[in-house]
Image 1 (cartoon, rainbow, N blue to C red):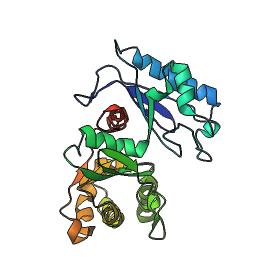
Image 2: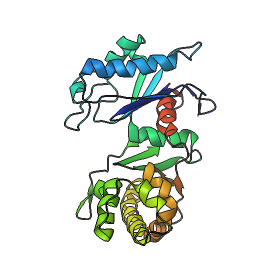
Image 3: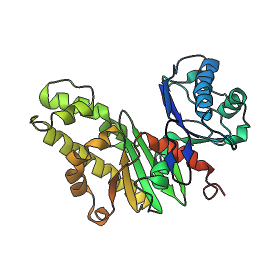
Length: 286
């Protein structure tokens, strides 16, 4: 099973690791109160996981979970604090708590950072399946970053790296679009999807997305220099507007990087589920 735990939800599904696809009709998602007491949070997670496992007719129950940190992903201890989510899990062992509720061994649960799970899924069965190394960005309400080599993806944790006059996430997330659009037009929007829907008639859209593409290129120039990937994979809601910033992005890349494929993620919300479940592929963790 692949599980995606976010700041306000949990999603889970059974995944066929041979076909690299989610099994039909096993996908479940529900809201989670991230400010609840620890037992209530674990109960909520466990309830959905048990429901998904009801579709499993036979075989060992094994789980891969993509979840934001900070955590000790090997032991399962949470260090999430002061992030307006899951504070009550601080210092607790999530593997042990879940295993008790679900009634499976703790060593049948594996954890992975959610940004890394996204790239793991895309390289396992999505846009990056034919590459031996890659970097990934999830562009949305926040900035997720990851790198992939030798069959395993890792969190790059570059959201708060120094960038221009602030940090990278301030320029490569929804809030940049909201703030910059207000500066240009004097009008308020809440998301990028709204902006994209007005692309044909809005006089500010071309400049807005060109600036974003230039910012993203500057960030990628640094990221690529460090990781030397074969491909770059872009996911998250903002990546759906790739056609609006692709040209500016490619122009802004340093000449030696312009031949590196820049790919839009294929799996969408399934990426984290496929990536987390693929932790049980024998060739990944041997």
